[in-house]
Length: 152
Image 1 (cartoon, one colour):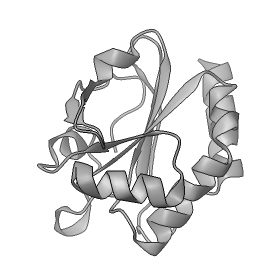
Image 2 (cartoon, rainbow, N blue to C red; image 1 turned 30 degrees about the vertical axis):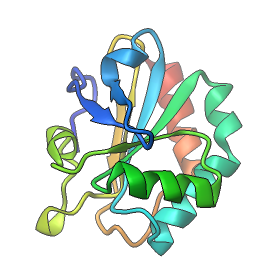
Image 3 (cartoon, rainbow, N blue to C red; image 1 turned 30 degrees about the horizontal axis):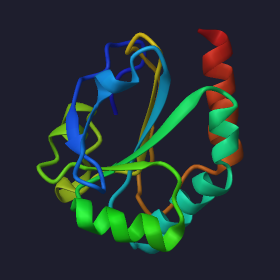
C-alpha cells in the first residue's frame, strides 16, 4: 500500500453516472479512498454496506468516502442502487489508480485497502488486508482515523 505521509497520486475516473471525478475535486477536504475487489461480491457488499450504515461517522469527521474498483460505471450504478450506497463509486477499469496507490494484489486484483488523504493531498493513513476475504471492522477503522487525524 502507498506510504503514509507522502503525496497522494492524482487521478481522474468516471463515477457511476459517467461523470469524471478527480482527486483534485477534494482539495481542502479529507477523503477516504476505499479500494475493493468488486461489486456484488459477498465481502465487498458487507464492507460497503457497513460503511453506508456508518457514513455519518465519516461525515462528522469531515471525511468524504469514495469507493474504487475495476468494475464498470454501469456495474457501480446498479450495485450502489441495490445497496443504497450514499457515497461515490469510481471505475478504475485499467487499474491505474489501484496501481498508483500500490493496492493491486495477487493476479492484478485490487486489494481490500484504503488511503485517508488530508486537505493538502497527503496520505494520513494507508492500510491493506493481506487477504481480501475479510475487511477491517468499522470500529478499528474509525479508531485508526481518529488517532491519525488527531496525531497529524
